[in-house]
Length: 405
Image 1 (cartoon, helix red, strand yellow):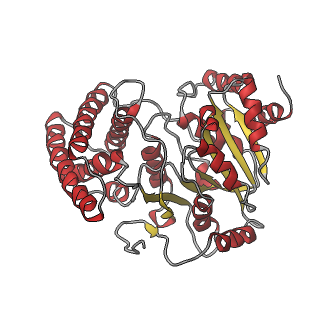
Image 2 (cartoon, one colour):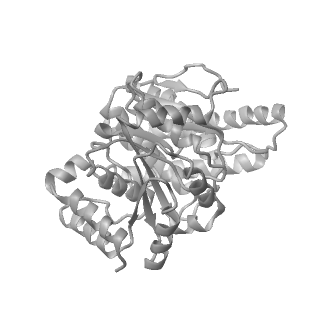
């Protein structure tokens, strides 16, 4: 059973008791009469070739409170796009599939670039999420948006229900809800959070002193989770990172755009299993690239708040991270031993070596270019420059939906 301890500056909503998913969904169905809920799904075509996506579609067939579903599809040709439309058409709600590689959407991205909007050519989850937000914001009747990844092996419809509930229930005043869960099978997962993010935040507090921002960032039980929900008024102004720093930058944007009293985190399932990222240090991806970009994002946000990252301070940070990460190994070794889980200490140490290298590279890149990769602008900014853009976007998606090219 989860604990109910509130140990941060935001509200934590754990899974307690024996409330059924049917009871939650019954309430959400009643709430949907006044507050329309949109589920947005960033997906690669390759994910439709997995059992994970089959399980997600199967579970969503049982959901009856959603106003609409929007799926942003990357890495698909025309034939594959048509196939995905057919797969998603079995769901009992309106489904719009955004063909990100299609000529209509590509032409709109070019229009954004010509208008001076940056990072619209950086492919990835960040751009996909941003495009989906722009599309759903053209619907004035949409009230709340929830997002989750499409590689969840043990998906359950409890995920969207627990993401939406706190932000649509009239008894609450939350604008943003971050999902969390445990990452454990017969061993502990979530290396980037356990061995990098949490030790790094603790190290930053030791070296630079406690701050409201670091208190906030340390309050999340799974800051790097890909599941969250927010209301329309907040979604309009949030900028989105096109890099691996997406989750961290989104939390930071929420921090700057609303009160911490209107932010919560919810335990959306007991344990979560998805495809594991390669620890590769190659430039193309892997956890090493992810952690480097997460560190750069945090450095940049702290710098924007007046923190100076000198060489001497960074050396202290690196040494502090060394100690904090190795203390984490001791902690998780104890957790694993008591619970009879597999624990490979050498593998954990090897991960920390990679993460330390990531931290050093992040510092070098940050010093060379403190501004980093520009975030994708809030949609309020886009509409101020291109007032009709979101309506053109909606028309393009509807044309793709109705006919083949």
